[in-house]
Image (cartoon, rainbow, N blue to C red; front, side, top):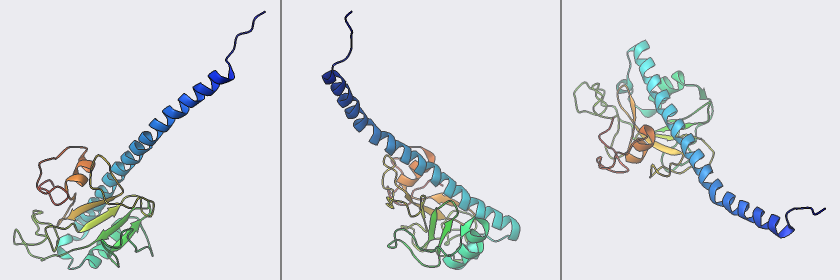
Length: 207
């Protein structure tokens, strides 16, 4: 009786083909998975900081406009209204910000408030006005909130393209809200293409 089967050469060729296909597809799948995790985490971070500002205003009538420094804002609002790990105060990219304006949440995200400036004025157009039309920033060309959505884990690189999201993002703090800053961050946040908005990689008109 004749028995049918595969030769060793045929088996090896099949395994080689499977290996080549896996080598081509697995990195893409991993990148897509990481990108989706970064997107989800960014949305959670923006939502969490927004809720902290909203709750603080509801309880005490104090908005970001009423805090004269980044340290006061972080200590009195974000650290009190968000689940924060005490004693952690180093941002993954020290060139962007460091010091007491840094805080880490229990889910591992690291936040840093920088370039913060509150004119503490109700005059529309002044820094951090109560109309939520001007951010609480000392410079309109720089963000005042950096977010590393996966904390100490790598890559610890700022996102410059929504097609290749990384783990560090920029946002602007207004009197009673936090909004993503710059076209790449906005595209990741809103799953949208905002090409044509003012200042790719800097502040745009969204928010």
